[in-house]
Image (tube, rainbow, N blue to C red; front, side):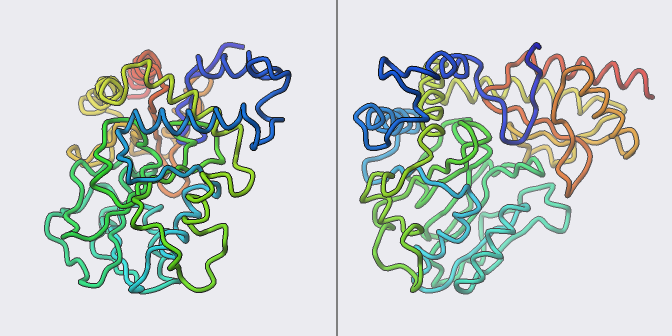
Length: 360
């Protein structure tokens, strides 16, 4: 069976090279006579895997020494609670709501203190990013929260909000490692890895050291304290060991591709092919304000639900998987993460042209 072009929003396509390497090492990792899946997370062999993974990520993102890298579990959704539990000293936080996940994070934070929705794009089904140059930032806000790339709606912050000196917390799950980033602009930058980096089950949190304290909200579980994980180098309990091992391989693959600047260039080239077609198509149209378009997630529609369903079905038969839009918005969505080869996008556009000719 040939591999399909997998446009899933996550768990998503991984570099074939990485999968082949992992397959070759499945039964015997580097002469240990066992799989990484079977290995003690306290062993020398595993210590090397997690240490190297962290170092490679630091290299890729130029992470400063005063930031800790944590490999955690519970996905991005667990961070919705962990962030306020650890950071809400004044019990106030400001949220910019630009999609489903920011909305969920905002609702979760409301359980722990006063969460203020200081900007939103809900009025137009999250199809744009609001102007965040002069926001009503709360004087006593502990942090300002954004979801930087909105997987469902296909929007991306091209300019970070002006937080007026407050700590910026950003969920980058679906744009993680897709382009260079200045880590120093954030207090916390975090994301689930299952979109652009590895298999589901790992969330990476990059957090500035001054935000890691014992002063957490009363009743915060031990497992939800950043300090516990930071002090134990992500090995307080058994980590998602195999997932971290695959992430480590992806970091090495990214370095080999030329790092994040090279990835950004490649991703822009890929996205342009699809957006250019959508802009000129008579049948398909993109749903996002042009200036806020994501390089990773491209939603589009025909304007006719039956035709959308027909397209998804025929695309699947032609070897293009997971093009159905998120259940909350319908239509179609092509997620074109780092590991999606450019020919995948070219072939998709070719197929869309053919479909358009047959269905106009």
